[in-house]
Image 1 (spheres, rainbow, N blue to C red):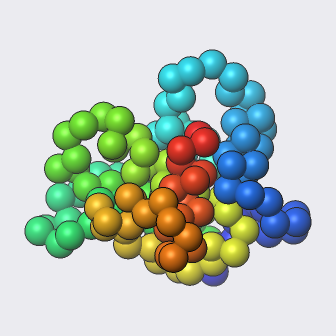
Image 2 (cartoon, one colour; image 1 turned 180 degrees about the vertical axis):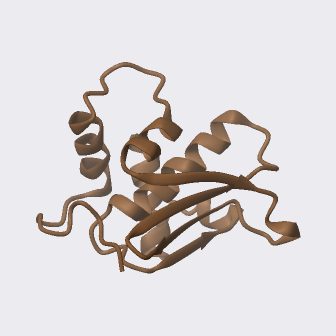
Length: 128
C-alpha cells in the first residue's frame, strides 16, 4: 500500500498539512490550481461520470501509485476544485491509510467531526 509523504513525520492538523504542501511546492499566489498540485504530488488525475454511481470523488492507491477521480458531472468549478482538494487531503494527511476513499456529495459537506476522515479532508481542502 502506498503511504503518504508525511508518514515519517508527527501528526499535524489538516490545515498544517495543506500549508506544508503549498510551502514545499513554492505556491504563494492565488487562486491555487488544485489539479496541478495533485499531479505535482505524483497522483494521476481523471474525471468520470461514475456510470450513475453516487460519488463526487475518489482516491485509490494501488501498486505504489495513487489516482484521484472526480465526477465529471460536477459543473461548478469551485465545487470541483474543493472535491479535488478533499481527495488530496486523504492522500496527504497522516492516518488516512485506506486503499480507497469513495466520497459522496454528503461526505464532501461534512464539517462536524463525526466522520473524522471526511471532516479532516474537508478541513485540508478548505485551508488549501
